[in-house]
Amino acid sequence: RKEVEQDPGPFNVPEGATVAFNCTYSNSASQSFFWYRQDCRKEPKLLMSVYSSGNEDGRFTAQLNRASQYISLLIRDSKLSDSATYLCVVTGFNNAGNMLTFGGGTRLMVKP
Amino acid sequence: EAQVTQNPRYLITVTGKKLTVTCSQNMNHEYMSWYRQDPGLGLRQIYYSMNVEVTDKGDVPEGYKVSRKEKRNFPLILESPSPNQTSLYFCASSLDRLGTGELFFGEGSRLTVL
Image 1 (cartoon, rainbow over the protein chains, first blue to last red):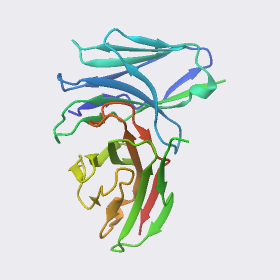
Image 2: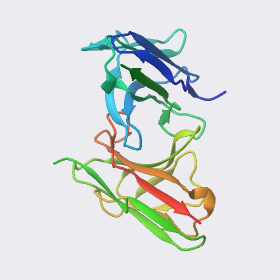
Image 3: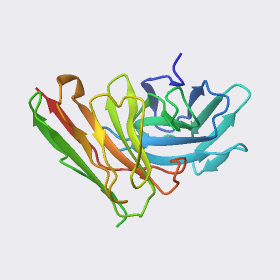
Image 4: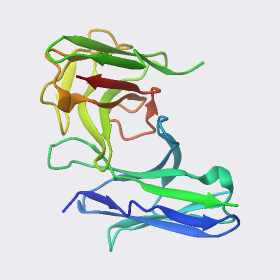
């Protein structure tokens, strides 16, 4: 089982739709959680951190469920510019002993 | 402007010809790391460094070397590149020494080994 798993998608949604992605992690001792956005052939950029109490930034809401070991990202009122790959990042020691593990990413395509 | 700079951005080379990909950050970050990104495999960490002269293996270190002689620079060295090292490489840095804070990525270096 992968340490951090995401549905690769693509998720094809119309403009204005609400879409949600999940990311599951296997290490119950994981400490910090993040969502990054990566545009095609570009570098990943931090979208938002995920706090235990959940957090919201405009149209984006991130939540953490420690009991079920997953984080989620909800995007409301999707825009064409939201089309990208969304990567979850989990920190904590993994099988290799280091701190950071990336999920494989979920691709979102927002259509007119 | 705060940034992470990688060079070269694109490189085509042949098997066995040593190459170095440079990475430099101007944010005085403690933590630096290298990743490779391959279709279907996502981002995988190659090496990371929490401080000058301190480097550690990531998930896929075989075939790579790194050094951290100065805080700002973290070059990735392929002593004898092979075709399976064809990939998109990213350097990243973080203010947090453990790398658990926000990561700032370079623009990526696309390497092809023939």
